[in-house]
Image (cartoon, rainbow, N blue to C red; front, top):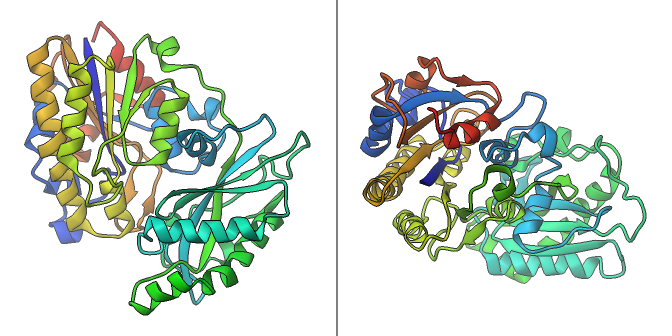
Length: 405
């Protein structure tokens, strides 16, 4: 039996006036996802406990079958694993976004998708500024997504469970003052954020970008702190060899922590311009080569469209996922023997608020041994009518592998 999961990140949403009162899932032409619904079952799952902040770190951990209330320690340590950064028992990883803040407002949480070469220059400037401190180490990532590690050096770190930070994508176009780090060690984080401002303002490459009319990085934003999580391997937990295709460090890191094969795809950007077809081909090839029993294809584009409040882009991204990933992947799975195919996002991301939200997301599952229900479309309304409602989203993965469905 081969298994596949397609994650259209943050796709669950509300009805949109600009879409004639439909959600993006209802407005989009997604015949292949609808085919999965027709051939199988549709239901709802809640991947983000109300006591935790909504985000892909929590949502995907649940989606992969690991209860975040038990296993989640923070977003940044997962991304550190993606970069092969080893964390000691007392070390902390912290996400370091490059952002644009103007007039006290979070104008862009990506510094308008800052180029990676400029991001590297700014991160290197931050590291030089801290060269005399044995604790801080900055690591470059992709574009605005970077990391900071606090090396405890066998001494207790200043941070703790009461340290709170805010994801910058949750406060787009909002004042930042009420969302600065709070709690133990927060004064160190706020100081680093403040020190970044003159460093970035004095960067010639940054000034050139600003002169061209683009949003440029005005400071770093520190958030998502945590220590190394202790996760059982996926093979040990479920008896399946896993592999993941993604352009996002968070998913790469979680895959590595679970012992999965992380498959890199040229043209995968983590944005709306990602190469959807290349991801679909890579998933099929991984199954054909028997690199995994279970393949995960994650697409960030739908989430990014929501963060930008762009309903048309969200619909377009959804249609690209359907055409280039779900369709070809399902066709291959049907041709090769016993299979199951699951489509499910990790959390809702509302176009109205431009941020992640709590709540149930729709899923659809078809394949060998699954008796079809009455659903004919894959969307929020169809899922809400289903009797299959998982209050703990981590129960969905055992459901995928259960033989007696």
